[in-house]
Image (cartoon, rainbow, N blue to C red; front, side, top):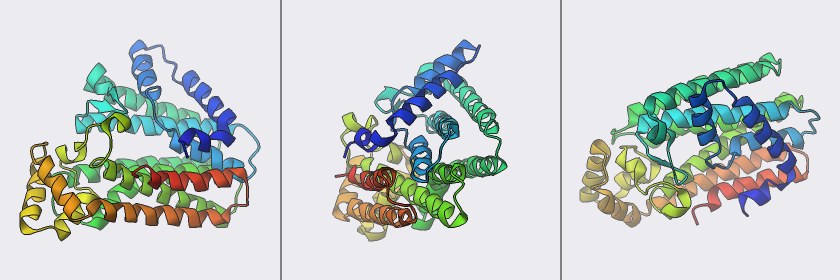
Amino acid sequence: MPILEIYAPIVADMNAVDALIRERLHSDVVLIRQVAEYIIHSGGKRLRPALVLFVANALGYQGHQHHELAAVVEFIHTSTLLHDDVVDESDLRRGNKTANALFGNAASVLVGDFLYSRAFQMMVSVDSMRVMQVLAEATNIIAEGEVLQLLNCHDADVTVNGYLQVIRCKTAKLFEAAARLGAILAGAPPEIEQPMADFGMHLGTAFQIIDDVLDYSADESETGKHLGDDLAEGKPTLPLIHAMQHGTSTQIACVRHAIENGGREDFPVVLEAIQSTRALDFTRKHARTEADLAIAALQALPASIFKDALLQLSEFAVARCF
């Protein structure tokens, strides 16, 4: 099911969030407006803000603070993208030039800082210490995940657990926080709030794992990024880890060399090793397990069109690779 169909129950809410994003992007500094508007409006699924809206609605929230927090989550996510692209020296995202490619690294880093600080201004307006606690913890753990990923780059000995630790911190933590925030706004008890956080964490993990599959199998025109970008950056993702565990000695040596040295020269041989060891099938199964855990966590919710949409979103997370 296309993502826009899944979002049908929250169309009005998403429109309100988009309007709020445009309003809160305002700055008297022209360059800030240019860079922030470019990255915010250059595409993306708005998954994280959608989780805030879906969970809040599924639990009967009445009010408008879920719009504010959805925008906060999107600002935090966008700021991490700006910083990521500088660290990774990326020049393409979602089929468009990255902000750092257009405006330079310094502008991207500083506008990322602006979005972080604007997000914290906005979350204060909700006047909830619990909300502040969740988002402060999330942003700190995301930063740790970024550093962990940097340390793992060009390390061919990273384990599956080490790989998953990076995903949980760098990507899944904001999904987890978004779903938890929806429950907090609705005044949900701990026996509901925690499953919603678990749902977000497993959904975010599934999404990232499939992204790592797509790096070796997708149509570049659909993903808006180059195949083999992770390999070029020396990132030891799950397909590579599996290929090293199950390949021939020649394949293992080739994958190790590719991770340790980066670049695209070894991509054809590495891709052959991934295919012959069925590494993508293994990785898809791992994502399927995460999606199933997300679906199980949703049993804590009462029946509603919003719960149905979250179930569909869990399926969408893994269906993107087929």
